[in-house]
Amino acid sequence: MSIELPAHAPHPFFDVVDDCLAIDGRRVTELATQIGRTPFYAYARRYMSERVALLRRTLPTEVHLHYAMKANPMPAVVSHFKTLVDGIDVASPREMQVALDAGVPPGIISFAGPGKSAEDLRRAVFAGIILNVESELEVERLGGIARESGRRPRVAVRVNPDFELKTSGMKMGGGPKQFGVDAERVPQLLRRIGELPLEFVGFHIFSGSQNLRHEAIVEAQQKSIALAINLARAAPAPVRILNIGGGFGVPHFPGEQPLQLEPIAANLRELVQVARAQLPQAELVLELGRFLVQEAGIYVCRVLDRKISRGHVFLITDGGLHHHLSASGNFGQVIRKNYPVLVGNRVVGSRRETASVVGPLCTPLDLLADRMDLAAAEVDDLIVVLQSGAYGLTASPTAFLSHPPPAEVLL
Image (tube, rainbow, N blue to C red):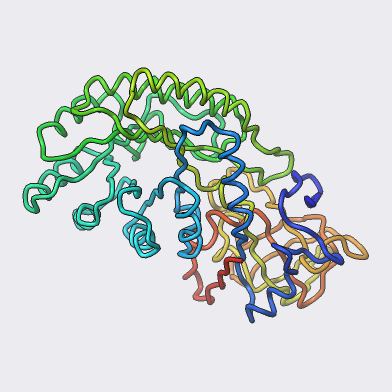
């Protein structure tokens, strides 16, 4: 049963049992008792598996699925995904180590990010993973590591395309960007890669994220394939991996609706044929993070105080922006909007009220729900933020004001 929230799209996964939210069959009140403290994040592996299965059913079988673990790098989550997807994409040395510790084969791990140090590059080379190079300096450093070590690093060029993923939440390509190498400079870089003891494997073209318009994703994928075909003419070896990013969004805010997958799948079926003809050795890769985990997670905190200030109700909790920066509106939102929030043990409640949910931090930015229609809550009730499976704990300033971190569990 999906949960109908006022002004928000129905939530696809969680149930309500006796007016209490349940995740994977467990009421949040029972979870809080089992974990022994609040706040906490809880993720349901079954829902992650269902999302991957949906993509496998819908998309062409030739398309490879990679998990962008920056969305949720919890080690148990990464261990779960290694059995479901075709590759893991990491964005830091710590993420690389988590993936390796989880038993992910180095050959299906790729490392992207604009700020790799010489030591980061060396560790990745010796681990045997693919490096998505983002500058000329990275290429020269890798050439030096190759000469010193006798190893032949595998590299893909991350391209900053000359187009954007329109209407995306965060634009990662097009115009001046810190990400990747500008498309017009890539041919010269490819020639340099050919001069060095490096193994060229392909391209990484990531133009944007969190997009709910299938038309924009279709257009970006078409342009990405065309760009890769054009750049491949200057490549020192055949393209074996073509990562065209992701960008698949999930609804967070009032008025948003789920992404339509079928038009994207139809477009990919055509692009697979184009790529097979023009880049016959290339694996076509979709790199997805948020779409795989966002809706499978919740953040739960406890009401510490109920305060009325000049007629307005504030529910003061033991959680906040230091744990969940995204829900506070301080992670890329231009105009703050409410995530889907509810009182976990009183989903409907006997009466409703307009209230704001705030945390314990000494800043007015510590806001999890602003003037939202909620069941009337009391001290010790549990506040639940849905859509919390991605860019939650590790995307938040957990050291801010030195409050303790939340727990994390995978169910």
